[in-house]
Amino acid sequence: MKYLHLIWAGLMRKKTRTFLTLFSVVAAFTLFGLLDAVRVAFNAPESMAGIDRLIVSSKFSIIQPLPYADFTRIQAVPGVQQVAYANWFGGIYQDPKNFFPNIAVSPRAFLDIHPEFVLPDAQKQAFLNTRTGAIVGEILANRFGWKLGDKIPLQATIFPNKDGSNNWEFNLVGIFHAAEPELQGIEQQLLFHYDYFDEARQFGQGTVGWYIVKVDDPAHANEVAQAIDHLFANSSDETKTQSEREFQLSFAKQIGDIGLIVTAIMGAVFFALLLLTGNTMAQAIRDRIPELAVLKTIGFANHTVLLIVLAESVFMVLLGGLGGMVTAKLMLPAMSAATGGQLTLPLTAKTWLLGAVLMLLLGVAVGLPPAVKAMRLKIVDALARR
Image 1: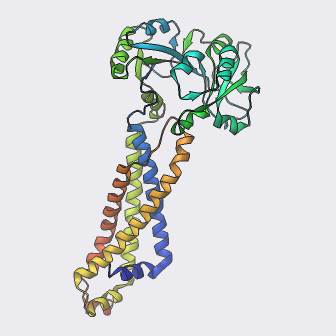
Image 2: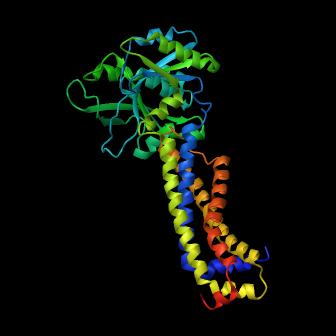
């Protein structure tokens, strides 16, 4: 620590250059924190919410519907406690940019299977008894200023009405909220009656998008999933039964291998950062050759000069890296909410540890070459700028 003032003086010799380099490190580690949180989210174990739920969808594509007639056969599978069904609607409100999930569901079974959707009893009954009724999450209601009794018009992008128009209208009869703060993203959805949807749509009657299955014992969920898929094997409507989390993430995974994409981006970012910071440190040492020669002249050993220069690099990367990680942590709650509850983006202890290791490795990698050069300086040549 006795050389801390020398390290700080070296960094502050060219303040603009140091702060621009520091900003680059902050940006790089902010991106690292955000991307690693995405990677962790896609590979994290399931939360307690939904641990006893399975999703049955088409084996061929998540957009391929399944027959409604499968309902009773799934219900009869040993280990199945209750079955609900749902269908993606894909409507838009006023403007395409006002996107939010809107889904046709079997009302009673869906709410029974999803206790995290908290709805007052009176509003729940109104939803069950109103064919054109809809319920929305509190966040979504606040976003558009909706209140109970409002009529919500949606423009269909997939399912037109029988009359040929794309206009659908729903009566807002309930506003639900999430049972737990970490599930608040579900409050950005609109749910309405499947029966109304199936009767009024122009095509696709008698089919559902997917089934939601509640199992008696989560420990036997895999066996139940295999039994359901075996039931429809070699039929025209083969199924793929998976955990609720896997089903949700399958939408995002359609864009490709998330882990590979994240790794490639982070690799490119840190390679660019390595070149940038390495060049900055090399330039800083070239500017200070006479000063380093003076240090040696007054008695500083070669290894001491090496450590001082190396410490400058490590200190700058650590300072910027920690700033970037803190920035990422502050941004993640907003990003989690923006996913509509599909992803919880954590900055885990392992991410912090990995970030710290990367900071040290990057600091040593960019600082070691100029530090070795400074150690090998000959006083006479340095003072003569040779």
